[in-house]
Length: 251
Image (cartoon, rainbow, N blue to C red; front, side):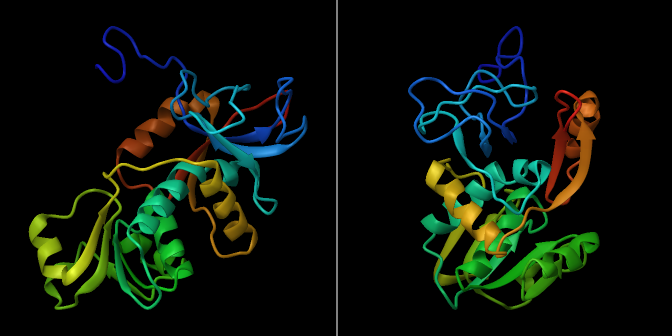
């Protein structure tokens, strides 16, 4: 309650990620023009992204905004910022290197799907852990090996890894101890992350180069926002869920 509001929600408009077209700019804006196609986040701002209009600062302080990848739709681009930047920040801080064996636990989630692709981009040999229904999808993202956590425990198959990335925050200490090399690195989605314009720029370049792509499970209209949240809260989504906001007859 202290974080989200004691008597009522601190944020009256929900949502963090967005993608759209710039309608107008302030007189001191230098990086963007009216009509530019952009994507980003409202993290740290009082207003969220479930709206026809969102006001974002040009320079990184609270919100983050950058040019949208040219080869993505607005719905696809809106699914990139938070999961993509979190995975990039955590893997970069973990100093992931070419040739390392990296395990991504929760490889089918929002952060996990990007972590698998970024791990491959950094030259690592990626093992993804997910549920039965998502094995083929995680494999298609570039994982060399995929494990079904409903049938096997990755920590008991004798393999050890240079890096273990818990993308859902559910790995036990015992599993970590059995799976990491002596000087291995454990990474977790629960660790502090940072959202920066340069991260979005790197992700845009990787997406346009065909090395990274968003995974979208379901799409909802703004009127179905409550239904979308109920689906996400079940904890079984693949990648991301997107809410499309109509504006002047367009989406």
